[in-house]
Length: 105
Image 1 (cartoon, helix red, strand yellow):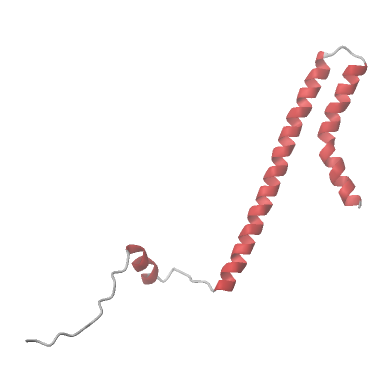
Image 2 (tube, rainbow, N blue to C red; image 1 turned 120 degrees about the vertical axis):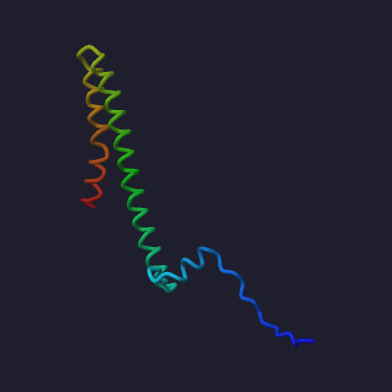
């Protein structure tokens, strides 16, 4: 009878593990580096989200102003027509006025 050696067979690595561990182009990060990069990425995402939201609000505001302007154009000249034209302009200028007021404070 031959003596048997108890060797632990290493588990088979997945294709992904072989690719990651066998390539020099993979860079590993410390937890701190990862956290810093993640914080930067979150800030970038928030910046894009805020700017996209502002743009969407502006597009909607322009559309609302156009609706009111069209109502004004359908009216005969007079107080109602003038009020609608003023309202149309006020809708467009509302965001800029509020932004300017915040800058003054």
